[in-house]
Length: 330
Image (cartoon, rainbow, N blue to C red; front, side):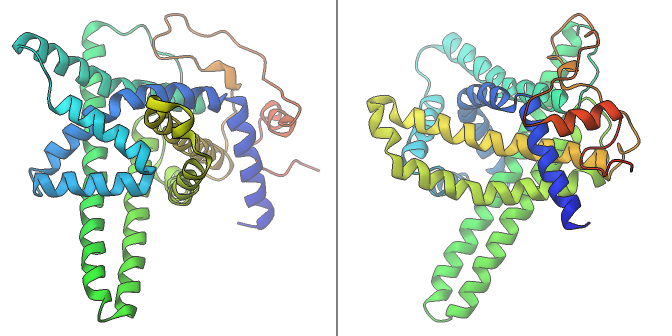
């Protein structure tokens, strides 16, 4: 792949990101994620406790959250976890609370599926019945458990490597550096696998594995680098102090929002790559506005292609039926 082709992929990815209104999708995804993070972490920690020690999993999560999000956002997550872990009231209120938490945990999956379906221009199915709705919720719950368990295993292993490296670093500085590199590669590898599973399994279209691996790896690198930049920005701007008592929640919301933008940009890159070099390269591309949420009951009509002043190149490529980033015929 030449430098010109790589630049074409990057340019087309940002253009598609704008045409799909990824900033708005990221805001909705952030809202659902904030209310889902506590039950998802509780369930994932419980599942990880079947393999590792539960307290070790909790300590690893708390330590990594602080390093990942910053002290304020991690404190907000800890407060949500404590509130969800210690429900008050009788049996009925506790049961209702648990059910609401489970529904909230799967709601973020529904919003995530909507976003990826829009990016991949997935066809709109018929209105789902009750059984299909329950099945989708169960599948979404299982998907969340799997990804959450995978990430928590990564956190536990990373914490163990970090502790071993600290002990070893007192005597062998070179080996400690090697362990840091191994820890970084392991973290990026696990995140790449998690993103690949999401990009492959969640959209309501057939996506090949070779279409998602490069996009997942690019997203994992962006996420690994971006999380440090986001944490630095939130720590230096004093967002938490500006909002008073709600500062920790605002910091958490901002961190999730910026992370969602990285995730959606990676999804757009995956879509562009699949049409330029992957299994979708011979297929025509529908307009960005053709995809509608999963709960819509009417099939969408053909809509004009959205054209923005800064994204005319991508729109022109869609009209011509060319893959994004491809060289136009002479």
